[in-house]
Length: 419
Image (cartoon, rainbow, N blue to C red; front, side):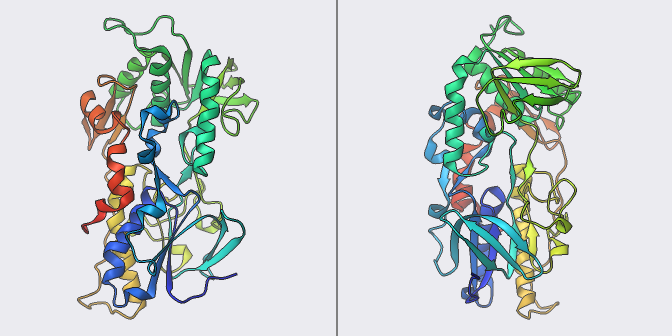
């Protein structure tokens, strides 16, 4: 069945950093400023009932004791109770089909069945999935918790762990496992000589952490050695046997074949090689070759999809998927949505009330913080091109993986002021 058009639907697909932030900003600053706010309804649609601080997964997967679980997993519906029901609705479901010509999207409801929503405006912010279910909210909270439980049960029996991927997810996971299982080398030692568990990071790149300068990557690699973690560079993981190990099955022994012909047997295998955009419901004509939604990098519109269609976050081609980049783009996309909504109801160019069109410009200076273990002195990072001391990386990210910052983000107080 089709949702009756009693109001003009603004549909937000996805409820993570991009989708939740955009929803709060629109509800606080855009809809109330329109000539007839009650004629619009914002519907936020997500495969999960909760928001997750995804960067915390490398530590959270080891034990529930590391984080307050009510802060790690935050109810989406509770976060939006502050808004009038006539202007907001939350739907727990998964987008299965987008018809940009007829301007509707079909949702497989978590409660069963499906429903099709017409839209007046649409924001595609469905994010991406991690290759390992341990490292992201790829489905329900229950599925993630079950994956963690299965992994934790197998961990005490694993004598060798292989992590594929030298980006932040792989390095942070290796660091957390290293300190949890092996402890740290002595103050005057550069490495643990005989670690309890053999932990190896394998990357096809010539250095780990390619977004950072080589000196910082080397420092991170040296710090991993102090946690009993080895790094193998310039070699690709060709195959894993059984082939579902680390993906569908997070626990279990595996034989890992490398590009140089070497075969390594391990007790646990964790793939941490990037992300896959959640865009299977979008027609190929709207997608880049890598599966991201083709999006104007300055206006954040999906031009090929017609009027008032936008995309933001790791599913979008407009920018890199860094969280700080996504957050900086939220006021821009919301201003352009407001302008387009005004134009759709007859506000004319040149009218003083018409929102000015804004352009997004991504800051591409070296900015990344990488946590290596749980203490203060092991982390690396840079911000706006400047190298950061380890203690600052710990204070900002390392102590709780940004969990200190997500309360205001999920609850909307971060967006109380328009910017």
